[in-house]
View 1 (cartoon, rainbow, N blue to C red):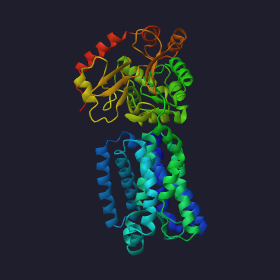
View 2 (cartoon, rainbow, N blue to C red):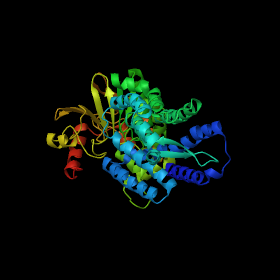
View 3 (tube, helix red, strand yellow):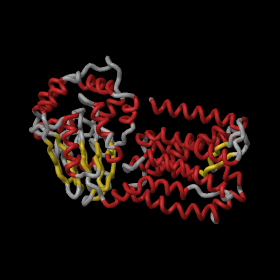
Length: 483
């Protein structure tokens, strides 16, 4: 809700500016450059930043449908003379198109290749190719295929071509998909537009291409992380923390001793006795942590008010949601279903919570080959890491290696401890001991619904793996697989 409110506020302020821009004070040439390049454009592209969670949760078909609908609406607005509305709708359409296009990129190397290729391609197009012809001979076409940024006190506008907006959205979305640096990337790419505008004015170059500096900004912000992914990194897979902070701290201490480059947080962090503390601890890792969505995270973010359900799981879900603030709930709501990482010695690995197609689908060491293979249909990675069932395993399914990393905070392994996986150059299923007596006491003191039972049956002792796998398979047999 916080992000949605900010998006609405930004849209409102921009709409007001567009409606009154000609009546404002004329700032002069360099005043215009400073205002448009470093105030108006960042404000406009804040819309992309604020809408970014939509890319995380929207399906490719939904994005494709949105692009088609928005293009038709933009054309309608253009034909009816509603230029300001058309400007915003064009921006939304091209942003959605960039995110839709990103869905075809299976590795970060593809994004890097595009970033490098568009530098000479855009430069040629602007100075000698089709863009030059359109700008000089068909200016009305260029107006229709660009986003206008009105100058204060004037009837003229600075313009960015639609490809500039598309690649801004694509690169920003790629930072989320491939675990790069979204915040820094947004800042540098936004500033690149201002720098391009300033250079165009300083050297009196009409139509200076914006994509070269945009691409350079993306690479500058993320080059080291892209390089690490291309050569492969050691990954600590921490799944199903379930608000158990003492277990998490113990696991993270061992992760540091193992010198893991990246921590993949595999879902179900927050539904447990210390949700805020666990989420804050993991987010404090900064760009060393890569999050994906668990069913528990999704349900906490969508928690209903008291009285909608009386069972223990619903009570625990509501309680966990009440411990988090609005920004934290929006963070959970925006988490992606899967993440992909290049792992040292193992190649590209896909990380998911339940299965690659659902955050609550059940797969265990006992899952029949045919059913497990259907879950991996369409997956190109040779290694898939999952969680959800809280029992570690490492098995082959349809020629792919399927690994369950276990549960840090709520294992079903027969022996207490924090269970996780270290990937690179091979797969190590690990158990980290910690002071379960102290953890149980801390859990009982939280007020978490059913805390005494949780401490006694899931921290001080735990169910056995065979018992848990058999129970999960019974549940899976009563559940219709997602299509």
